[in-house]
Length: 510
Image (tube, rainbow, N blue to C red; front, side, top):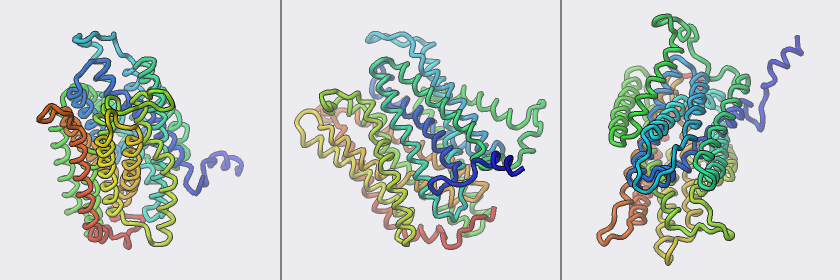
């Protein structure tokens, strides 16, 4: 009998001081990000060089896509909280992502200048994007929530765990941008997008095989409610899957129109935030309510952060392609491969940051979450100012070293904000709202991507004398980020008090 127990609990114990389930999620998310960032590295060039869209039109489609990618996790988070559970939601999302990335591998016939792409080709392209958007909606917030469920809310390893998880995200992102970017720009778009699809398939396999390591984390809160028949003999689980397929067709139509997506974003944001505030004020005790309010303040700062940071996939990608000397060791590096720099930095620096937070925390010196957010915005703005200085002080093409520098400062800023924010939201939320709050976290990222699209489009407008204004736009947004970061630092003390960390317990009043 004991021998059977050993076999059944082979996933017990820890690895590097963390539950083994963390590393199952690490590798599953690594391959999901391989597929996403491999596709993301190519998307703007696919639109401008294959479908021959103008920069302005391409930025609009790119913004609509990335905005929807971050709207749908709100729906996926709520469905997981109330019915599916996070594990089933992640599994369904992974299946949709495999299908979507596979669809992008179909590129249709090549076009001549002035020729319009075939309607069938464009419909396949938009439908593939819709599958990816829906897949991310089910997977993105919920896999992060499972990470949080592996740890008690008072566990000091949480920030370290999310930083390790974040390294997995960016290990996949780096490999995806390098491999898919190189294949797509060198051998053909279908090779790059196909590699992204294969990566997502690996992630799905790892998640399925690693289920025992999760130890029940992310399972449905009420399996009987999920399995009970509801309509025409169909239970809630099957109805959710059917409803998501219907939703994919709606996304297929919406992703073409940036204006419609932005209106949908505003409406969704107002509804979600109003609902969270209603529940916080009328159903939670004072301390839990205050924690939720601090969570919303932290979430709101993301709009500016990602609005600037996500220039990497659009205007900064085009700037690198057209205005940067990309020659390294005698080889002109494809611009899409520079999308890997941020992720490579995170893979290198992430473990150092994880160790640093633990070291500071053990000595009572760790900065509060609001302080980390303020410093993140300051570093983001400084990165833009460094690039502006490099571009304006050089004759001709901008030296490539300044691309490495802007990504370095943006990466350190990201490590101050993104994994720390994921940890904070799962800690500050009550149990039956954590999926909703994580979805709102990603909804704010969607708002940031919508802002990013508007900023990118502003770089295409010529100056008074017909000059390129991209560096002037970067200077303005860089100064804005530093100013907002300073305001966040001033507010950090009252926000920390409202978090009531001294009374935080592993159980909550929900």
